[in-house]
Image 1 (spheres, rainbow, N blue to C red):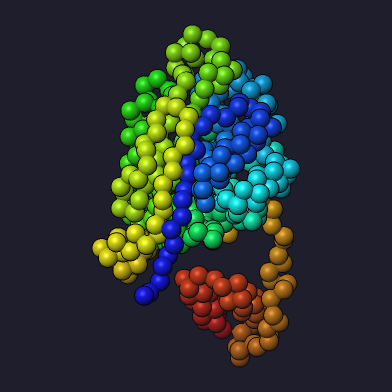
Image 2 (cartoon, rainbow, N blue to C red):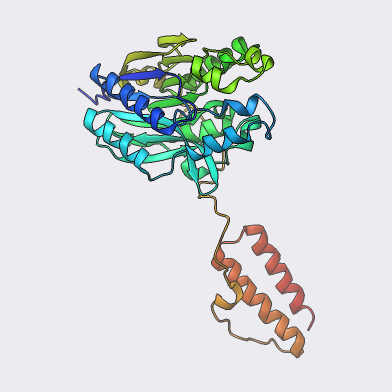
Length: 376
């Protein structure tokens, strides 16, 4: 009969956070997780930075104006590990549901726009930090790195995730698609709540989500947040701000391989979308193309990915001192000074070889050695 890749029920939750209150956001997240689990969902996706809420204030005024709001947002962000994460994991375990949720992660004095991936056994499988905060977001969020560009193995299949405008970073999307996700979480802020951006942002969201489903041959759970009346009242202190920032926003949908919309789109209000996810339908697209497989040409174009974790502190390595001892062979006719230079060149060549130097560097070292020998 062949393989059966599985069928399950997925849910997308479009909702507003309780700005910037970590505990109330957590309570709301747990209630929503419990609700969709009660409807039989096996996987649920919640919006970008749902805990403690997206920092809308960065778009509404100067850094000096929003300083106190920044402090409130920062002090309510989520450390990993923490009791907040424990509560989310416990909810997933109790309700037997896989959860992907956006949080603002605080690590030291830097915050990151992060997705958490929690399985139904209550285990935090990992996280993804947004690689490039968008525009003024860079005043609040740090940069992620390639170590978080990965898929996660859930019991329902391989799951990946990106945040907001990361979906315009084609090389990043391609690197993730190459890891063969079957379900992709596209988590966004709902910026159609900004006057003048309604059409543009919804259009961009739909284009990115449906194209990712097409090229990645995967299901896409596209989830956005909304802003409710309390959110607007908290942030808007001037007539300009009230005109610019309003209630509503959001474009959420569940999309099948190839780009067809299975549920939604849900726009402008809180709500929940459900859809059956039949992973066997991916095979219909495999018949036509595989962007990182039989429809790729790595001999013509290929992609390099830096997958190591970014670090600001590295142990000092005394490369020359730790190099293996080299025999001091002195060719006939060389004077003492030239001999010492040649010995150092040979020692440096050994270090380069040990450290896996680029072929061009090794070539240059050989040329240098030859030039020194000519001094005889």
